[in-house]
Figure 1: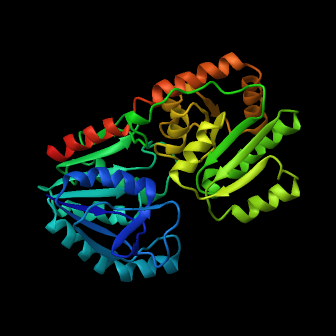
Figure 2: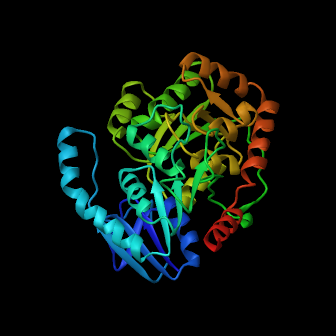
Figure 3: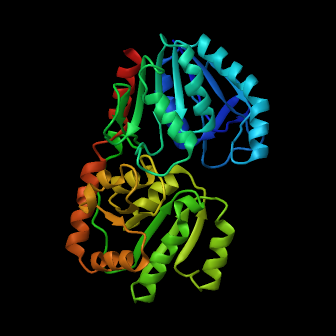
Length: 372
């Protein structure tokens, strides 16, 4: 089988190996275990790999480098118009060679892939929609257009679209799905957190406005000012790092807030194991892996009510759903920090739920789709 991946994820080429964002590559390595030839159509990044990059394990890769583009300004739109003919032809050529077409959405390349795949109604196709499928949420028009095309059974045929959560008004194309990070073999007994020492919070994600890392800091800062012994570690990099550093310095928070940067999966796992809470006040998510991963290791999740997050947290029974109103959210956390039994109950419920979604189960589902 020839398997073509159409993705907006930027790739780095080093010593004839292809590197990209590690969680994405780890997932694709599961898909590609069962294919003979792999075609990757993606932007190429001229830089060195980082600790959060990983490489494809497949031995037969045809990498097709395409230009990235956006439509965020008039100038960018003009540039995109010039690039689109060549990119469209590259996508068409890859899809023509493929036995199975796999789209990664949402994204600008994913949108173009949604359009080009219409020309191949008889080919087997899958799409991973990694964003928020909620049609009522505020999203860019390009995201809404991708969802409409993928959901439309006249334009999009022979397609399984993997989405996070269960939604109304979906067609037979749509398959509720999940993602995973750990195997059955990773399940070890979790010790109850110590309530007599410092309460540790961890934030795993890009330091960008959409993830609201500053709000995470302000939550912990407010608890600290109320007399709680708390600390927060943030893992990730992004455009907000400088402003966050300034906020930490200006508010004398360096003793309780630390920026760890991008780290390996093993380092992040150790952080989960030693933390009481995983904190993600994000504006938009699909299936937030940081939340599911933290739950796997016994962290109580604190997250916003976006996408399928309320379902993941069982509407507050296995975590804390943020209102994004600081006083109200601080009050929720105060109540939990003062109730060890309630904390332990939420933690155990989080463990029990998240450990149903292992890579073993994920791989079995992928095998079924590739065989169908």
